[in-house]
Length: 400
Image 1 (cartoon, rainbow, N blue to C red):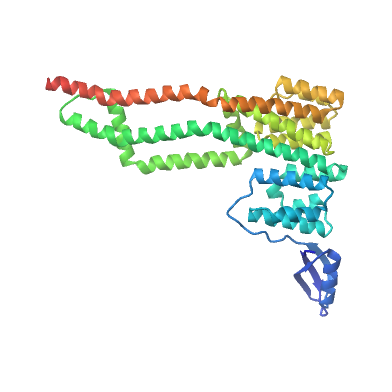
Image 2 (cartoon, one colour):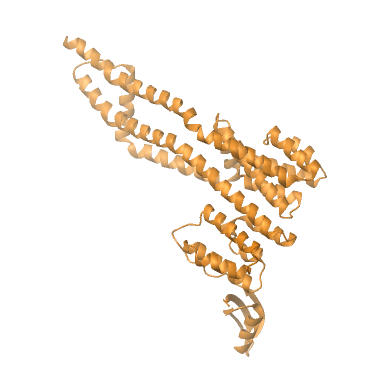
């Protein structure tokens, strides 16, 4: 049986306080160890086990796979600590293996599953840990783990779809920006100098781009500082609630992208709400969890308002009507779920509907963005071509 670290405060024979750490299988055994050292235990608390640091971070898909394996072990009526130990033995990520091993050790020492996972809340997240805690209280651990596994898998797939859809336009914009910077910063100034030496009057396009190019050559560090500062500023603003809300609001004004953001957020909201309710949580706790699980500041703010209204005695149907973020379809389905006392099932219906819609939108984002990119590329090429060829035509006239 594995041991756990216990931090103790004790008094020796001279009355001096002593602090230290003892490794034992349980708190009572730790008491006996401290007493055997000739000390009088005052307090003993379980410490945190050292988890190995690894360059590999723990990904969402690994947590989803772990959750599915955990649910299979529980349905097979295998001991939780033994099952977790077997999962840890075949885990390829060293950091996650240490986390699972520590959870198994704590459960073997007599802790509840949620309490053991609470030591690794940064890995699993608040929603995961609190859902497990509610499932333990309600005795529906296996079903909740299955729902959690499905939810996590779907969240990972949706995130991958969105990233894959945005990869192509991001690469095109990056390559276009690099090409334009090279042309404006190095090519056009050389042509402009050649034209000026032959007394060719430069058109407005060429003069503007030449000025920009010369400024890039002379003050490239300032441009770089602006780009880096802008990225750092956006990242800092996103980490603050107020800035994150403003950025989220601006993103929701972008056509087509706003439909993907709203669909993804409603799907997550409904899925977390259904899992939380099925695990035995109350409506208020479930709404709080669903708001945080949506990942969108605007929906989180709406969920907080719904929580306050429900806490004040409002019915969910009336509260949903005051929500500005949720779509009419999701409101009708959730209201029907409250009326029929089948909220978890209706939440699953809403989640599946918006999963399909978001999947369709992300798969077709290329067909929407492609014409915009083509027009942008054509515009940039036209401006650069005019800046080079207009003075060249004037020079040819002078030679002729």
